[in-house]
Image 1 (cartoon, rainbow, N blue to C red):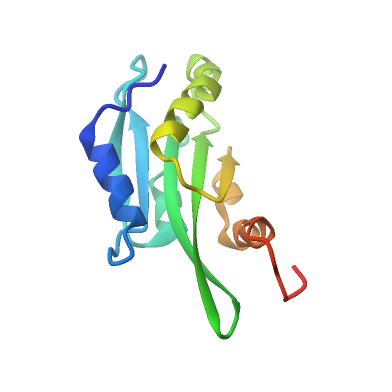
Image 2: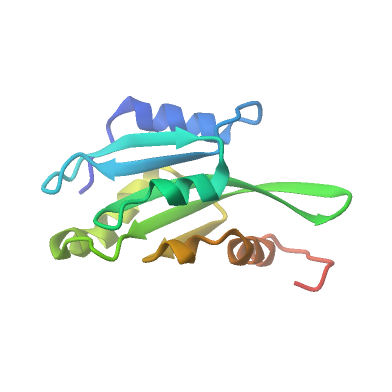
Amino acid sequence: MADLSDPKIDEAYQDVRADKSETNWLLLDYESDRSDKLQLTSTGSGGLAELRDQLDDSKASYGYVRIQYSNDKESVREKFILVIWIGPNCKVMRKAKISVHTADVKSVLRVYSVEVPAREKDDLKEEPIVIKLRKAGGASYDGV
């Protein structure tokens, strides 16, 4: 079971979700290689691209991102994604625990439209994720 008891995690989650906040992503990492305790590593306002730059190829991490996109020139939507990052050089034992720990993370980072598993930074390109969000969002009048 993952430990997400750090109050900074919930504070950052609420900040990313807040309409008036500039913060649009957060990143959770394990305290150490052997620990199951997650801590808030960083937050930012540069979107998915900025989060991608923070990911470490040797770690497993969890990201939560607010993404803005428009379906047409009159509307802008904001949706949230949950990123489950398993870097290409992540240790085997850490990889083995991810599926169990992801359920614990989902109980804290509760509201999101799509879950994005990522093994390489290219898995986190914004355009394919926006297409997933459009499909998950219901009515789409632009052919997606």
